[in-house]
Amino acid sequence: MKDVAVNNDPESNIEKPAGGFPMQGMMMDYNLFMPRLFNWCKSLGFDPGKIMPSRAFCSDESQGYPIILMTKHFGTFPFNHGRVGGVVATGRHGPHAAHGRDMVIVQASHVGYDPEQKAFGIYRRAHTTHEERSSSCGKIHNVISWYKNEYAFARHNILLHNDNESRIIVIDNQLLREDRDEGLFLRLDRFIDTDADGQHSPTKILSTAKVFKPASSLVQHVGEGSFNGITPKPIGTKLVSDSFYFNRNIPRLGEGAHHIERNMIGYMPQIVTAPSPVLTAAQINTQIEFDRTFRTIVKEQGYKGKKVLFIAGLNIDISPEHNQLFPLTKFVPWAAYVQDRDGFYYTLEQQELVQLLAQQSTDNHDQIDLEQAIQMMTELDEVNIDI
Ligand SMILES: [Zn+2]
Image 1 (cartoon, rainbow, N blue to C red):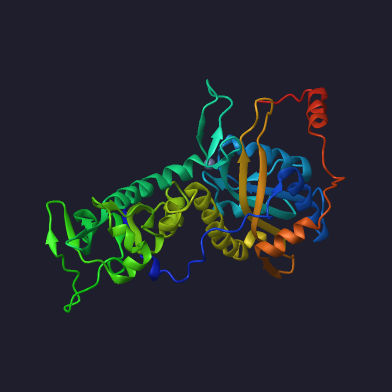
Image 2 (cartoon, rainbow, N blue to C red; image 1 turned 45 degrees about the vertical axis):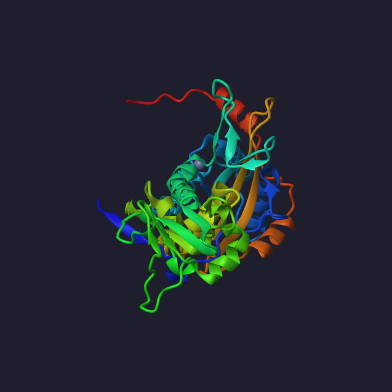
């Protein structure tokens, strides 16, 4: 295994879509989403009873309720197509294809929501000793923590001040070092004007930082008042996402443990500066997973000659109340891919996808009664296994 340095200067990645997507007016409760998805499949000619659904969800137990509803409406437990964080295990397309006539894949990254605090990224764990709140999605939270830390350091160690009436910017030496393998890297042109030789020359050298004359565009962006404090003031939240990028050595392990980090590193400036970093990160992971997975489905031999519906979105897990067994999960659709048996396919963007789902009936006469199905199993004659 070899660590590979990833250069993520945002301006060098022109293929990247805008990160994050609208949620206002787009979300629907899972108990409405699942029958609508099933009825949409039926309207596309999918054969009830011959559809093998699959889910690419995080391993978090909060994802269980959507899986139970999928089971109820599609009449079978869905194939497991997911890795922690909501990464699609594209290597499992073949086995999935072999398990049904027609195929449904639901991908969703997830984010917790605490209705009391009205905050994303946390979830009350009812089964812990004191029903503690913890991060959700925990995987995404862990991945972005290092980046948030680097950003917090930079916010506090770029100082704005004045020296004899002239504005100055003081930048920590570590942030100026360009020979680092890892860390937050400033797009220095956004902060400092170059001199006649094209250099960013300091006006003064301090023990752990250097002093510069700020670029006029920076003064305009942060406002002249930012330089007028009695003591040097950290740049704080005025350190905006397009003024820096991250580099980090991330092991290359296919769709394994570091896949999510590779997905997101180029978007980290946007994630760490977002009002809710875990929410933005989960949305971006969904967007990247849809874009990446759709092509693997098109190319998958096992899916040839089959109807395939692949839909990606965000699961919002609303922390259950004390008397609730499950979270009230909402789905925010992002995009869908539809393939016919003759190989014809198309994709649907968020707006049209939401409209199309909203038009579907929420009645599903094919849904199964899970309690009855379990009861039936207990009443069956025992089958002896010959060894
Ligand atoms: Zn998770």
